[in-house]
Length: 324
Image (tube, rainbow, N blue to C red; front, side, top):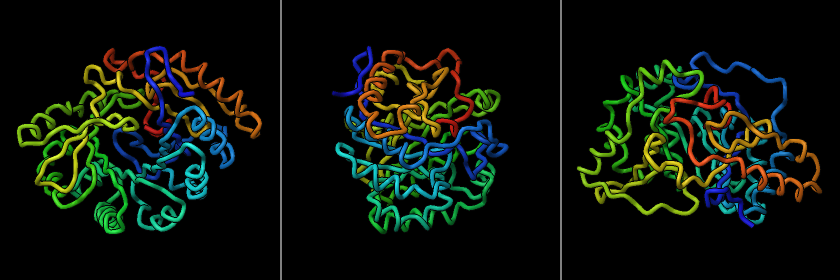
């Protein structure tokens, strides 16, 4: 049995947020830093594993652990290890801002982690500090190089921001030439908290995509468990480039991922008005059948498209809330 919706889409990819706390202050997400808005605690280790086990029974093959910043959870290695051991889970990945990347590589390897995504929105130290609130670019880049030397599968995410990193395409290409990783450019998306920022800084990703195609980059076939990025390769580069373009037509047609917040709410889309609580069915191992039935039933509520083209952001205050 595979999770599916009324539009014929199958869901084999779970993005599980472990916390909405973040230790960066990115302009487009948490410019004033983390502000606690809930009294409920985050899912504990056992609850998280029970959740992933139910998704695995329903065909999920890829698990991404995200946040907020998941490295702020001391039990992250244990969640990685137990998630990877679940029957059906083939890939476990972590998305991190990279501030603590170097100190975790060894424990993540021992736990069985398959892939790391690191956010690097600029290769210029001043721009990086302006965007994130941290002057730590060089340390993060050094840790990325160490991870590559250790043969980690790496993706690097950069949000496109007009007026801040929109002239850095040549620098990104130079950096990618000798590094065997996937560099993904993400189009800035509107949330409830960043509407004014979005209007000032939104940059259409197709602008850079067209430049790269003219330079000989060729699009790759999309894999079944891949995320939303369109990926490209070039014979002169060790790395690949991906584009996540949520405002493009048919973006939602290939959706294969579901999100669960750090407090156990299922979000059928990043921009839905509400989440559906699953936590009452995460307390005991013998609740798996009921949890699986609820998950499939809730999929009947998933819409065909996200509301961004109608300039609506649903209930998403910021990306840290449900894992971006």
